[in-house]
Image 1 (cartoon, helix red, strand yellow):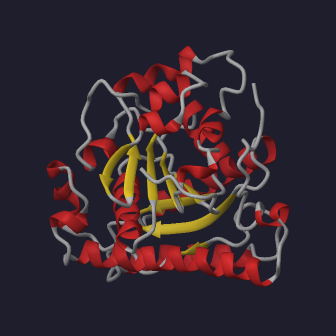
Image 2 (cartoon, helix red, strand yellow):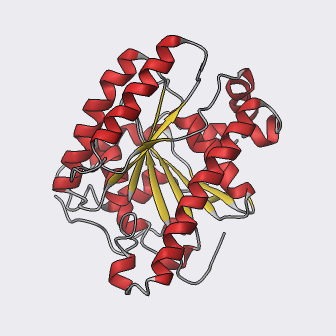
Image 3 (cartoon, helix red, strand yellow):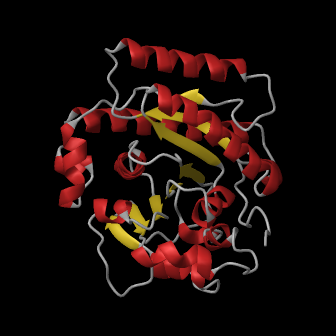
Amino acid sequence: MPDAAPHPVRVLAMMNQKGGVGKTTTTVNLAAAIAEQGRRVLIVDLDPQAHASLHVGVEDDDLPTVYDLLHEPEMGVRECIREISPNLHIVPAETDLAAVETELAGQPNRNARLAKALSDETLGYEFVLLDCPPALGLLTLNALSAAQEVLIPMQAHFLALQGVSKLLETVGLVRDQLNPILRVAGIVLCMHDAQTSHSKEVVADLERFFESQRSTKTAWSSARVYRPPIRRNIKLAECPSFGQSIFDYAPWAPGAVDYRKLAETIVAEWDRALAAAKASDLSEAEIRVLRGSLSSKPHARVE
């Protein structure tokens, strides 16, 4: 596990309140693609179904998981980390995680526990990807309290488009009440078929909407539709059953090509932001709000 000097970290909550849209597939394969570039990446599996954990081949064992991390405030995140590859690690989930909302009811700072756990500046990660469950509950609130940005995997369908407005509203509420620096980075189009007129219309609607928000003070005023879209590809559906990312299972499949390109964009954005901060000689406090908070402290204390 990395043990390095403090380094600015980009924390992305992978969120969609609808299941089956490619959220976990994107979490795992984007993380693997970033790690393939030599960047240190941590996945935190916050879904009680533990699909991200299974996707990378981590099964039930007796070692601590994210359940223990949230349940025991004094536990360090290092105790829960499993190595997938030298640059890619995961804090896995387990089925007991489904009970955490009831078990932590009334506990102090229950929505900020993950933010506190990830506050160790010597962990040495450059990117942390939080795989949220579909429901908006304690687990998702912990993710949104810990993250700087939200990345929304979705399919280019009309009903999915309708769900985006509700999701943005949720992010706005969390920003107002829990995490004032939270913002929407953008949308990743999954299982995409660029040839249909319907998908083209949905993408055009999304881009028009985000462009219309540029002068607002909303959490999504700088959001974008990321390119390339992730094409529908059977290899992406197959690789979880082997406990592998697409880069281990079928490294030259269209899905691997698309996630590599997406990772290049995500990494380049962060490098540009850090370079701009360095060139501007920003203070430590100013760097902490660069593209979100880089603070080593939890964003909020909420009971």
